[in-house]
Image (cartoon, rainbow, N blue to C red; front, top):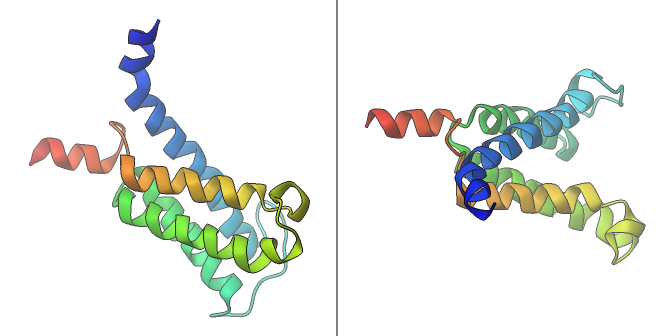
Amino acid sequence: MSQTFDRYAPYALSILRIIAALVFIEHGTSKLFGWPAPTPTPAMFSLYWCAAIIEIIGGILVLVGFCTRPAAFIMSGEMAFAYFLSHHPKSLFPIVNGGDPAVLYCFVFLYLAFAGGGPWSVDAMCRKRA
């Protein structure tokens, strides 16, 4: 059983990358375009607007697995910044301050920054050609 899991681990990494990026992109599109969930549009060049840009552009890069490591690193930093700026002042505990998603995104993207995009990524296709 362990050998089976080991054999499919790289593909699970790619699936984690794709799903995390898709859900993350939704946060950016909600902020900038009010879709799929309508939220107030932030003022241009505000922190909230910059976060939306990182979520959309970084999310697309991570989704396709292009420049996965730097994009994921930036997105991880954004989530750490968001957590300490918005959630942490309310309480030390993420379950109390509503910061669970920020913490999870932070560490999923930090993992991707170290692990890369996996076999189903543009990065992997480029490595095969080189």
